[in-house]
Image 1 (cartoon, rainbow, N blue to C red):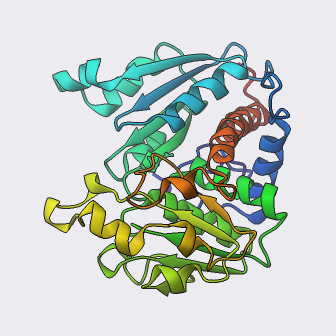
Image 2: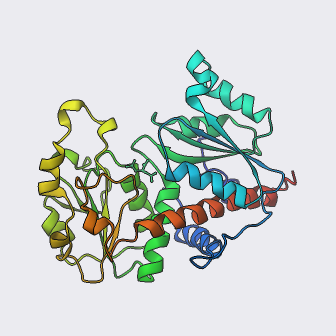
Image 3: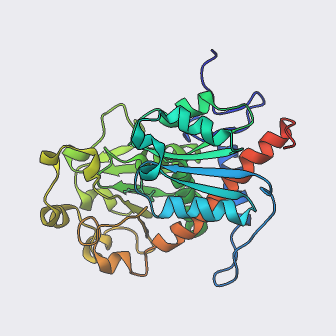
Length: 324
Ligand code: NCD
């Protein structure tokens, strides 16, 4: 078998498992497409018939609010049928293998699988074994990858800052266990960010070979000083041993983003968080709800980005000659 590639023979995106390997142009194209799906605030969401007659299967094997709802809305707003498999109520709990579940849904004509799983490699494994016309999109893979989150983060920054070259971006908190941070690193690097900082306590700092081009900071104050963008991360308790979990109050004292600390960043800095937030742990409520917070824009952009990715993989499939 040839080595796995998420691109088709013409180099177009067929699956989206990771942002690693996407060119600046491919990222820009997806962001432009996403931007075209954004309605002015307060007006009805944009709809199209681009995916009419197609079926999307959402298979979430980890909790999710934003990613799952936005993939569902994205599919519906493009005219697709959307199936949400409740894993806890599915035959997976009776011992059915992942691929048997996938093949079962393929037999019901699912065209795109959206998969979130805590096990590394599952999304790629599924992508390697589906029919040629089927696409697989990662909705979050272990601590490794969350490509649509990376894209929506990039889109949000672009809207507020206009570009990446002159920016100084700080990604703060539990970077070690964060798929959000890894995808952010990949997309910001592809877009040519000025300076990328990872800011974390020693225990939550990733290995040296992960995110090699980022500057590392061991203090929140030093890490966010003069930054244009401060991206806060949740402590991923579910991905570490009980003993390694810092006490919430203690964490907030040293690593929580408060109004006072935020004043060290540039006065026009934006504050981001992928959600779910743990208020008064990694971020205080006055910052989360404050004037510099763009957290709700991130959520809005999430729907548009997922519409863009769904639209792109189906357009690429049509370019390969599949007219289904
Ligand atoms: C994140 C995730 O699941 O990776 N949430 C999200 O998709 N918006 C971040 C997290 O769980 O902390």
